[in-house]
Image: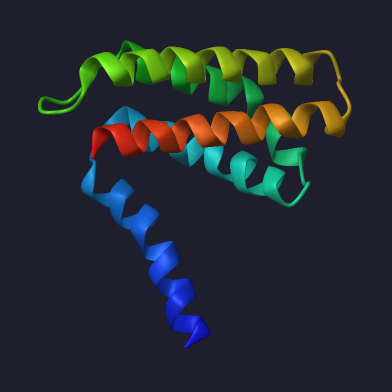
Length: 121
């Protein structure tokens, strides 16, 4: 029963991302997912290795057209927020900030990414 509950809980976010197809969003997610999920476990090597690529990817995503039928104004605002957060992450990595300072920045960006997904549904 517990396994079923876990599967159902995890299925929703995966399903939402699969239903919302946006090439630049998927590219950003591919670049950022190891960083995001690693940070949840306190593992920030992926963040340090990919912060510049994440920043470039969010800029590309932000410059792309929002697919028709989605809440463009809300998504634009959140994309700017995510770009600012990715900039902060990259700056922290460049400044060789401690994991304790970097982790909350990554978790915040991860949350913002999921806010974008929710607005797009």
